[in-house]
Length: 285
Ligand code: NAD
Image 1: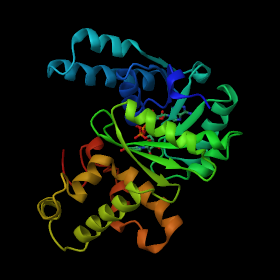
Image 2 (image 1 turned 30 degrees about the horizontal axis):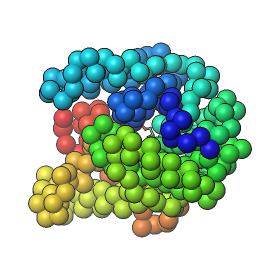
Image 3 (image 1 turned 120 degrees about the vertical axis):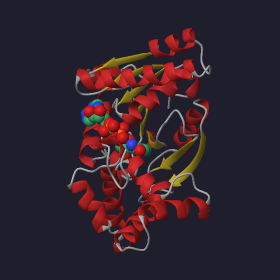
Image 4 (image 1 turned 180 degrees about the horizontal axis):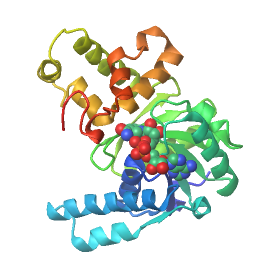
C-alpha cells in the first residue's frame, strides 16, 4: 500500500457537487489534484465551482489572493481517465449507481499502480460490492465526505469485508490531513450517517403528508425541539429529493419495510421538484 507521506497526487473521479469539493479541500491541503469528468462542460463547471468558493474565502478575508490562485492551480481538470493513472490515491465521486461505480473501479484498477488505494464517496452503496469489481479489494475503502465538502468537518470512513486495516487507517489519516474529523462504520446499509438520517427525513415527509403539522412547523419543531440546524424537510431540499429517494430506496431494499420511501417523496421527485437545486422542493427557493 502506498503510504500517505508518499501521496503527492490525488485523483478525483467526478467533478460534480462532491467531486469538486473533494478536489478543493485536497488542493488546499497541498496535494496536486487530477479531477476527471465525462464532458468538458462538467469539468469546467467543477473548476468554476472551486474558483468561486475560493474567491468567496478571499472576499471574507479567510484566504489571500495568491494562496487562492495556488490552490486553483493545483487542480487539473480532464475528461481523460488515463490522466488519473499517475495518482497516488483516488477518490471516486460519480453518480450513486452501483453498476457505474463498479465500472469506474474496474477501469481504475486497470490503469493505476497496484499499490494505490481506491476510495469511494458512496452514501449508501456497499463498499464490498464496489471493491469486488477490482483485483485489489483490500485496497478499497469508503471515504464518505459530507456536503458541502469544504464546510462540513466530518468524514465517515467505511470498511468493507476485505478492506485492510492499514487502508482504513490511511483513510482516516488522509481525511485528518484535509482538516476533517472522522468516524468509522462497517459496510452495512447506510453506514452510520444515512442509516439514521434518511429515516428521520422520511418520517418528516410522512408527517407532513399525513397532516401532522405544516411543513414550516415540522422543520421548526425539530430545530427548536432537538437543536439541529435544519429540520427534515429543509434538509431534504438541501440534499436533493432525488438523492434522498435513491438512498432511501437502497435502505428499503436492504433493510425492509421500515425504510420504505414516503409516498410524497416519490411524487415530488416524479414532478421534478428536487429541492434547492431546482428552486422548489418542500419549500420554495
Ligand atoms: P453529482 O451529480 O453532482 O456529480 C456526479 C458527477 O459524476 C457528474 O458530474 C457526472 O458527470 C460524473 N460522472 C458520471 N460518470 C462518470 C465517470 N465514469 N467518470 C467521471 N465522472 C463521471 O453528484 P454528487 O452529489 O457529487 O454525488 C457524487 C457521489 O457522492 C455519489 O455517490 C453520492 O451518493 C455521494 N454523496 C453525495 C452527497 C450529496 O449531498 N450530494 C453527500 C455525500 C456523498
